[in-house]
Length: 190
Image (cartoon, rainbow, N blue to C red):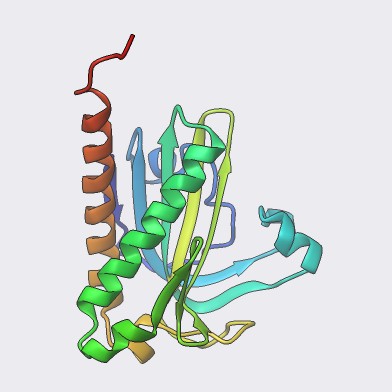
């Protein structure tokens, strides 16, 4: 899996959650994770989550760390598993990186969502295309512009968003590499 931190801030509007986004926009071919910092505003036309569509829930934030993960030759079940694995990786990273050790007691994961106390830290969705499994995962950098009570990296946890983005991608690529290696070292059981 290849990774790239994009050093330019831009809006996530849902259109980035598509096959070959990392390749066509950032020349990163194959299994990949890209990350950048920017605002978030997803219109209902580009919303993938059926629950959010039914509830007419707004997905927005003034500044978030965004991740687009693309994994080829996988089904949606595998995509959701990678999504939850990434959420768990991010939770461990947050617990290990917060300057105040007490922060860790207020952090929790519920499925693919991360929380700090009552504040929601992250948003995420997994989907499939005919070519690949796609995941958008984002963590609030600030609490501004969000439609629900949130918590954020900088304001609540004291964690640098760029450090978080790069370290989360490194941990994900290392974990997925280890999983792939584990699949090719075992013998078939007749």
